[in-house]
Length: 383
Image (cartoon, rainbow, N blue to C red; front, side, top):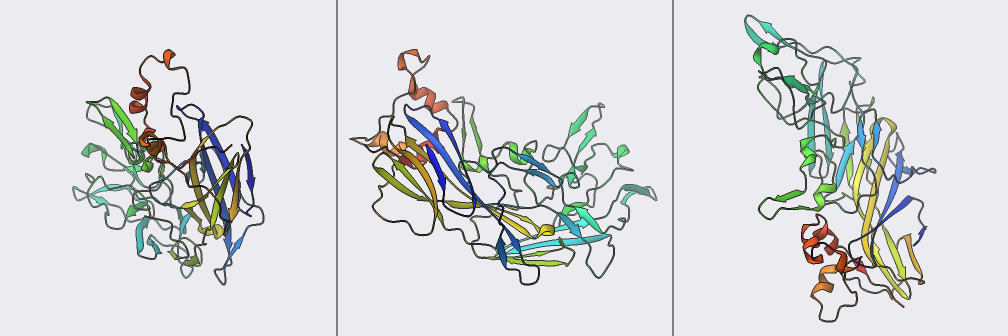
């Protein structure tokens, strides 16, 4: 499969074999990175575009997911950076970070270092220490590990790396509290277990993500995935769709206080050529990441397809922007081909059926990705 990128954005492709004979999965992603003019807020596409990556990466503020996921159920939204004290004041002991995109709003409370302390025989929260900036990280959010009554270490499943989690009252004094809290779930009692507040991708060690999109049928002994399994956002950072052209208002994460910028519009497609057949499919923007201190925005759009492999025939995928000429074929799906009276694609197993230990249909029933794969666009090969 030849791959071409006719856009100024970074592009990448991942291919893998499927259980079906002569059918392969191709995932294409483009990634655009823009820098905002600090005075006008206008975006400028970076001359050197960061590459599409195929593996997770670590940043000072938390994990950054790989770009080549096949599909998502919603638009992932993440922000990487610090909370900044207002420029009019050198330090603060607490503040709010606010985010608005169209009808989407989010607010988190940020505090200086605090601990639980004894006051007059009662437990109370110490006054926050002043800070000029505070990293918005999972480590500074609620969670962590504590000892139970049996002396065993237990972790807070939603955020094992955080702070503030405690299980025994006698261990409460001196326990640090989180620096970042959901504005509507402020901690007032040590027994509270609030949702960890964060703006970056959820860590894969978190229960907030570990069970996302996974459906287990114990009776049938089957496990299946839905597209939400490939999303990474904090539950309160998930957008129903990419807010193309909307204005972002971000308070408290730059030295200037407020950062306003308009999200770019993404208009790109892939042209798939298989022999004398061609198909056009639009790329779907589904990931937006902000880096406020660098005044940068990253947007990722993707498309996963299933295509038929035919030897010695032209095979290519080209990423293009704007309008594409007509004359392209309509895609189908594996599900459509299963139900077709005269299928154009034969759906047999990739290996000799006689060597399979169980029927091919049973393998498909128990394969976690079957439902997703059978609903993706299928591009049959031409002559």
